Image (cartoon, rainbow over all chains, first blue to last red; front, side, top):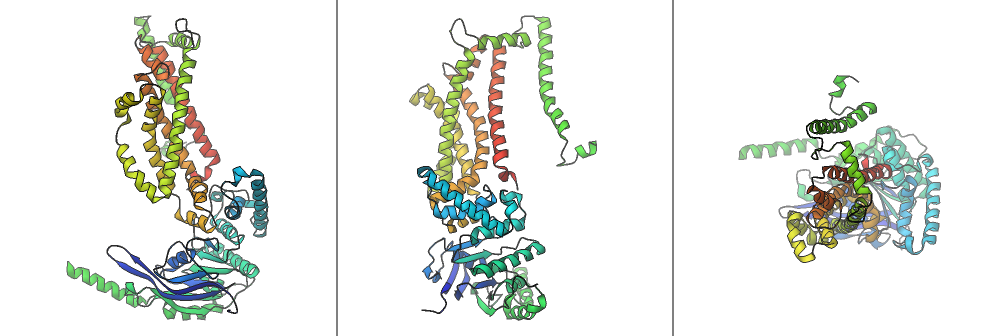
Length: 294
Length: 273
């Protein structure tokens, strides 16, 4: 038995996209272990396969080879063990905020036909879920938005509700796919602090995907850099190029860049961004090839 | 409001001006008609082609009171007949189209099974099928229900399909991770998300249904709004025709208006972009 149980274990994961003409290796031989209660951020340049990795963990896609275990169980398809927060479209627009937060519990606990077969039990459960959701919203400072519909909220509020919706279900692992990518800097910072606070309280396992290195270093305890070795060779597939512990910030601390600037510099050098000169060179070469053909 | 503002693209106008503009075409058409009618009556006081208000009034009275020859009230009989047919056929169409369209959008197998067929059949004008319907089903109420069904189902099912296909994949995925079963995803996520758009499609379906209802009644029937219109045409009963046209328009407009208000009131979220 390991000392601390693993929330997520990825073994030799490879993902290949194939269509009639091309094969593209997206992820190549990935190995990763995440302990329970750990806050892990995955960073990498856009298009490196971060979101694909997240989809694999959530069970929306099947890997070409390798294995993913969440809570020791192999991922076969989407399951209630995982919670997910997307950048957009994370709320059910026809429900009020409180119903949105309660909907997760409702889908989990209430049978499809219970409303008609056992209406009293249904109403009882429904009311208890709503109360719980309402209580939770109060804690998160969303009490006054409780009876609004998602389209009446600002982007930051929506995302807060989306986080509440998932946290209240207490999933084994919370996946976040660039959750604050569409927000303005101020709101983004407020939400970063919020997610830190929640993590301090609940100690839930969070798997946070972002392309913003600074954000990753600030919120996470551990930063994993996903990148392709050679920017020129597309068929290589991404692997983990760096796996470092980040300084742990408390939600009460003010974020200061100099506290982690060195680490960011360090990660940058390790291949977070492909070398700019290489890109220019490859562009030149492609351009030259095309010109020759003409 | 300045003229310059009126000419700018996408500019709102104030509500008083808007209501004047709404009334303008109605007032225009009515006064044009009354003027024409007045002119014709000056030449021939018994003119029936463009009846004046008094003639229309006698027409209305004739349809509302008990008819001496047939012993019933025309308008009630026709309304009952037409509305019953309408409700039955629209209900059947909507239930079938929503269920089939929903399942088509959710399951590729059902899409493959149904899609190409629907698209092919939807190109055959339903009125062209009328002779076949008369031959196989007869000319009674079932034939009319079938005609309305054929005339509206294929458009509605495509609309429902497209509306359900537009449900964001992320929402479906999220529901799955929240522990929803497939039945729940279909009915509690996809259908709920697409429902306002489906209601909107039903508004247009109603319009189509009226066309086929009136057409069917005109060709073969023993009662109904369309039947009466064709019947009184022989005696140049333009006054009754105008009155019936007004009723058809009012019913159609009311249904459409109610549905629109329902969408605006209960599904305001779907109107936001």
